[in-house]
Image (cartoon, rainbow, N blue to C red; front, top):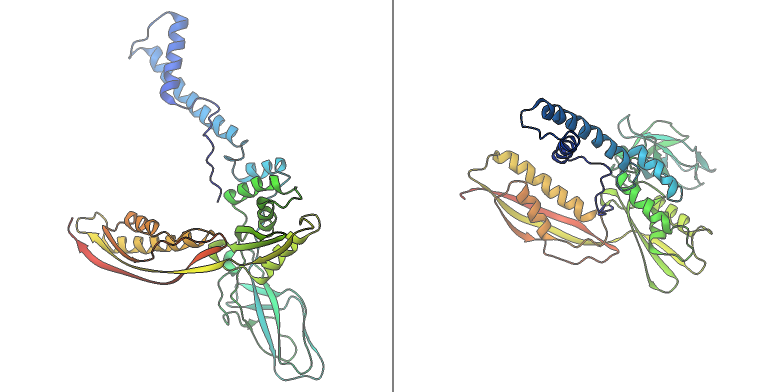
Length: 373
């Protein structure tokens, strides 16, 4: 995510006290009278100041929508025009590889039509992206299917969970996903869009800068949250791609990124581009925590909040490449959730390389009960 760290800007005065002081001073200078605290004129000016402040707040917010780091929604979309006409990425649909079986070996090819639908629950549908040929002598073939509903709804189905055929094909025996469905994402959010708009300023160069590779890779799908291009030897660019939530990029997305970065009007002729997932640095969580006896919240509420804090840490740790494994972050989140004390055995601090991500291996969390202050 982009850090919007530029100095804050206000276009008009929105401080109620300063507005009131300025109006009183102006009135006294013009009239020659010194206003008393309970005078009708001062009460009227106080009312007027409150109205003007409310109006100025609206004016200020409207003016800020013309500055890209403040703009939101459609206002930010409009500013894409001055960033090389960058447009917000639409939602993308999850994909998975399916294995299609036939009931017996055939002497001629069996064709499974493009658009053949499969479902896990009758609600979320997947449809094959292309026609599949099962050749003579073979009992099955593999094909990629895409979720009919764009967004995150189609993500996370484990192998074998999507297996109900909707459009039965010839000699059908069974069908099931053999990879976890992934790659679905909602419309690009404001923070990601703003970051990509800024990266677009380097997209027109032919020198192959880091932000140019990032911009073109992220433009493939709104599911991509982080891209890290590195070049450890002349002419070779290794691009690592990470999806939202720390998910592994599908082969389809990796291929789309490689195709995008290899286009004749994008890739410098001297660059050889490879695209892959980040390597994983595994870590474990092993901790005990204690709750103070006089806590205003119930022990059960704190326990639930601690569990949520740990899940927040796991997500934070895996959402960006090169993010060091930081036990201090974990302790701070658990303490903020209401724990009195944390006895943390794992993880220990570890530096993570730019092309790696921290990945949770296992966790053990124990509530050791209540302690006195």
